[in-house]
Amino acid sequence: MSTNPPDPRPGSLGSPSGAFAMLRTWMRTVVELNKRPDDVHEEFTNPPNWLRRALLVALALELYALTRLSLRDLPVIIALTIVYVLTMLIPPVPSPLGYIRTPRVAFIVTLILLWSPLHVLLVVAFGTLLGVVLLRLYEPWRALINTVLWAFPAALASWIGHAILGAIPGRLIGLTVASLTILVVYLVVNFALLALYNHFRRGVAFFPYWWSCVTENPLSQVLAAPLPILLGAVALGVDRGPWMALLLTALSAVTMPASRAQLAVFLASQRTVQDIVGALMIGLERSVPGAHAHARRVSDLVDGMGRRMRIPPATLESWRTAALLHDIGLIDADSRTASPMSHAIAGARILASYPDAIVADMVREHHTPWSAVTPRLRGAGGLGARVLAAAECYDELRHGTPATPGRVTHAATAAALRPLIGSQLDPRITSVLLETAERLERKAAS
Image (cartoon, rainbow, N blue to C red; front, side, top):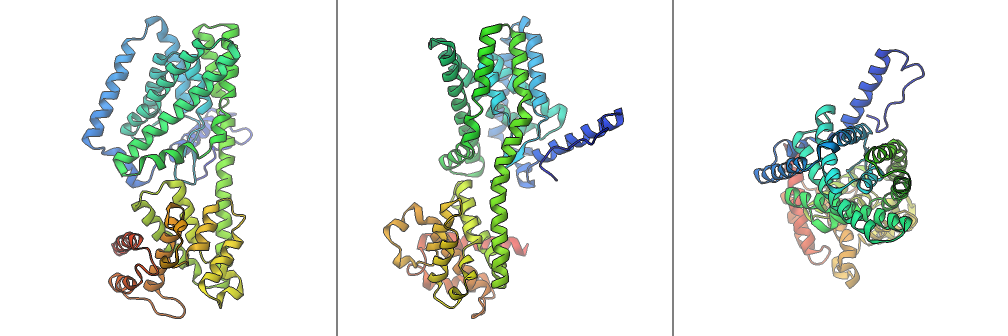
């Protein structure tokens, strides 16, 4: 399904049935883009008891916060919650790294800047729950998880931001510092909670995952600050009443489609890079038949090994790309008759202008024997190359090359691989390789 919201044709709103059909198509798009793979869906459907208890405690805190709300504020908070629910109609954008990105940062920062921590907590928490129930976006437990990931960091950022706003003299300077602080605090805490969840639920290393989230699109995040500063200046200069704050918050929500378009362009550029990789693979396959299948198998092995080693998603994406392109140097006809190191160097030369420098580095070094690896490549920087070397060696032994037949079983391949450990292959990497390969073989056989 397309990741873009449906484009209504001229005249489609001319009748109630046409408007309803367009709305239904839009909602189907939103729901589809919020879907997760079956294994992740199961994770949200049946969370462990400790997580259920933690989420129910968080819900109890949110209900307690609701009792602290003044009755006179109730109408405007209900209206603000409706605005928040309507923002959930903006379709998210799937990231090439597997994330689901929602273009809501500018709106959230505006909400945090213009409203008190109590109001922010209630609107984000109950707006999320209400939106999920009314729009049927995803699982109830996942909705509760998102209230923790979104509402509590937003309330904390609001408390810090308002403290800064009251401490710094000068409206423009105070608004600027408060908005940037709110942006940083919200994103850092939000991604930290997400990384904690993935650490305890999936065993993902905390810091690498958190860092990959924070640095995925930093420019877009920083560019979310000017709009809250502008709307905050209007709020301070015109009227500080709640209904004016509601109007300004709603105006920030109106900008979300434009933010989504910018985010979609950025993520589309990442997908364009993937298309370039596909084009290179097609060219290699024409020169070396069977290279595409070999590269896919090696990439699957590298991916599985990286997951077992808890490599962060952004780095793992670089590893997968390098695995797909590790033999790209064979496009050069002279490299096919020279030593393996020759086509590795040729491949790195071809990939020298590739946006991700890790890819060219891995391709250059993946034929370097472990016994000849320099101290620089024995560190974290050369880890990907050593993983790629082990995965390629296994695949060539298991499935054969044009000059040598493959082994019939995983056990026979492992036996042929063991003499290479310590000379050709990194011993620590090889143990991960054999465990990963055996798991993939069992999965393929089932």
